[in-house]
Length: 156
Image 1 (tube, rainbow, N blue to C red):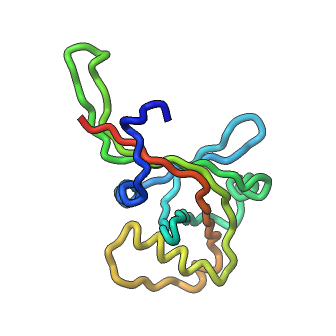
Image 2: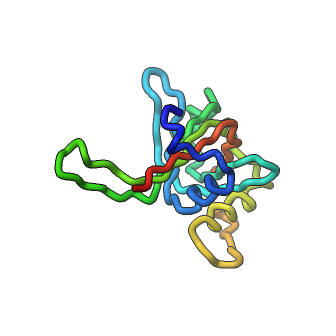
């Protein structure tokens, strides 16, 4: 990272940023151009490893691309605040972000509920969640096992 003064490497700080973010953008390999899609997500941090969880339909372009090449990049950002100035070049934006890459996989049926629970925990403070059995059967659940992750922050 060029701006080392903005880099965040502490896993607790990275986790705190991820907890604030609402959307995770993933980038997949397509033929001529990357394919980027915003997704709801959940995550875990265990044994010094991050895993991100997503859900999607049972078929579609995203799944085709993952099957062809599971290498995935991701990005999420939050805490945006425009900082104005007298001149256009004085403007900037406060932000916090997390970026990285890893390997995406489709989870087997017996791991779906754990992953969907992590997704729900990210958006809800409810202590427990109940899931519709049919809905769980027809949804695809993805796990991105993170290889590299870094955070970045600009606060004025």
